[in-house]
Amino acid sequence: MLHTDLFRPDNLKDASKPAFQIERGNTCAGVNAAILEYLVNNLPGSGQLRFLDVPCGDGSFLLSAKRLFPLSEVVGADIEPQTNKPGKPDKFCKFDAARQRLPENIGKFDVITSISGIMEFGNTQFFLSNLCDLLKDSGILIISNDNLISVRDRLLYLLFGRTGQYPGIASRNNPTWKPIPIAALLRLAIEAGLEPVNLFFVLPGRSEFLWSPIAIPVYCIQMIYDKLSGFDARNEFGFRLHPLISLYSRHYFITCRKRTLTEIGENRSGSNAK
Image (cartoon, rainbow, N blue to C red; front, side, top):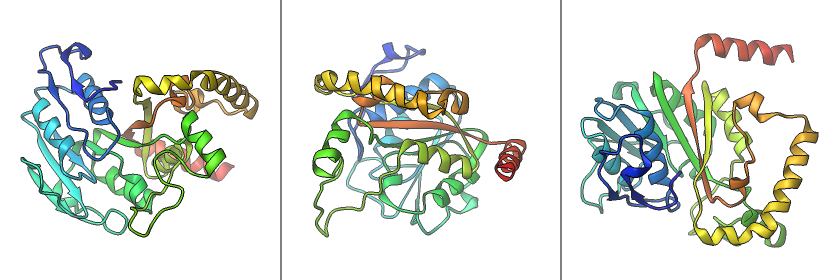
């Protein structure tokens, strides 16, 4: 995954894509670029796709997606429109993600993204269930979130009771921030009718690798702990929850697909059996 905000064709299967600067938007550096890199490598570039980004903020991600998928329709949704940038999504829906459902008349989408959004409000499973209903059967849902298991965050919490993304003492003007661990987010996605497909940690800046003297022994301890716990994430999800890069990265994203009715039924049967 990219760790800069420059979209470069040499990172892609389709090298004909133009290089251009991707705006960071309301997320960590490199996140929008990493998600777009994933989409370009996994979606047909000439297709008439439908994108939904929620919450969309100032629309930075959707405008970049439109450049890479020019025949697509891009739709944004947020509690308040931000109109201080040139350009805008093809459509905008105003809604409160924690209390409302997006109307079904906006149609189904090939790609739904929620970038740095789920930590801003509660009722996460309600929100994910709504997105699942709006996702096409063959569609991709991408959820990004702050990484709370980096060495930096672990030390900050141990020493000061805070993480890197939020101050330990917040004033009444600070935005709300509700941390959701990776394992909890995966579980919420499954309960909402989604199937996690992969987990990507966005590559950090070079300075983060200065934590290596601490990260490497912590990684060894984490592997031993995971082994002794008896939980095998590869068997459960098909990917690892604690790769070495997770101790450096500030942000991650999960790709999901819509579960079939058969899969949902099997999951309920398994839960009842337990």
